[in-house]
Length: 179
Length: 319
Image (cartoon, rainbow over all chains, first blue to last red; front, side, top):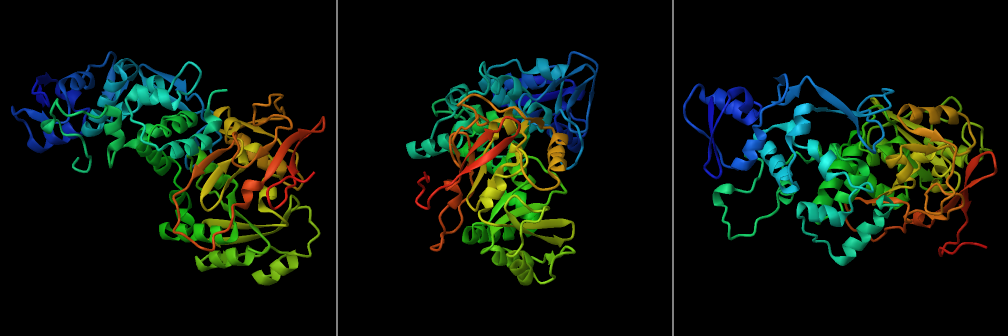
């Protein structure tokens, strides 16, 4: 077991194989060796850490980047992109994104918590957590893409464009508005 | 992790207004924004970029970066010089490289296709040669570029060319290939004569334009447009293999970029425009002639074609 201390001074006894999903913590453990000393996580709150260390619900393995892999996974198609053929001339027609069962169940949270987790995942170096839920929570909207006003409200982003800048950017991107 | 700026919980005071988690994420100087953006479909990304200055900068810098696109051809320091040359000469980028800018893809073996007027061709060719490219004349071409450009003025639209193309000069450096496409009249007319709508994208010195973004990036369709010249079917198949559904059906809607006889112009409400990072000021800057380019998609009952709308130099249409 590993003892973690969060930014709000809560202590968590966590199984080593779970916390080692974090490359940061894994490296720390390797550096300090076996120790009873708590590991401070000054950039992660207790509520976020609870989410990050939620156990998996299925048979799992851990990849080199600390990603939790579930043997039960589903495949979804990206909703509105042509196929990705990065650095190749493959003839693949569909881009697919694997989302493990654990990832799907993982972040059923509000939008503020979503980015808190993204920040924590960045700090802890857990890449798989960075963006999974954007596709399902941040991106989707009843009529398609969310309007900028709604995204601002959703994520509490302050609009700092001048009226002229906003008008120009709106004109440049008018094509993407709902039809 | 010292390179990752994060809001410090250690100094957090509940009396200080705290930024949202999303804002703090986008404020990260070395954050994994690319990982997030890569998961976001194009239209969502465009709308996210409209939320605030920081996100707008990040999206353009991470996803639609002209320097990253062109640096393999000219080096990072040469890209700005290339864009300055574009400004002086009105040179346009089109073809698969322009498509890749919008689509956030990398097709490793893509050529750089640049479109110039006859007048500007020598200056553009000189720029390419100055960046260590070598001219490889085709069998029918003169080994001297100037002589070849002079000779091409007398061409009577050979079948290979057509589509308003006066000449095509090939330049190679290692595995990189640049094609200099000399337009008989207006480079934009040549681009508007492409075989499908998904490749009707162009990059000027300061802006990138996608003329059919909804079909190209949202529904992944490419309207087949009738055009002359050999190799059109091969060209269309290349993009079908890359995932676009070739369609022959225009739209009856006046609210569609593929609408029959919908009056279009570069930069109109259907166009996706990306402003590129500004270049240093140039008193000799030329006007954006492509903004006056106007056209309609039309159909003769069998085939779809692009009908260019003539315009006067002051922007008024001719009757």
